[in-house]
Image 1 (spheres, helix red, strand yellow):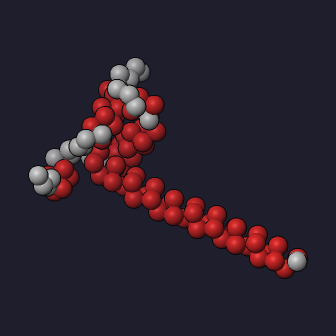
Image 2 (cartoon, one colour):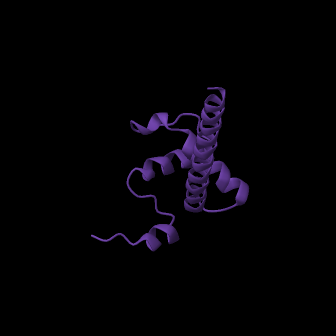
Length: 99
């Protein structure tokens, strides 16, 4: 079975686990304060919240907002990783100079 990724994008289709996130996003849109989502998704509220907010701020579809958030998170994670790595290298270089 081949899943057409263009279908997902054009139809704002959230497959598999992402469907639970879409339920969360729809709850935000409806202004519901009680979220009836199955486990383990009931504790993962930050991603759907950010997707909802990004969608509203930039006036884009949910699927675009999710893609944007995933790309941004990946780049930000790499940035933090390399920042941490450079700090560790600087610390080790300073220790080397002292010895």
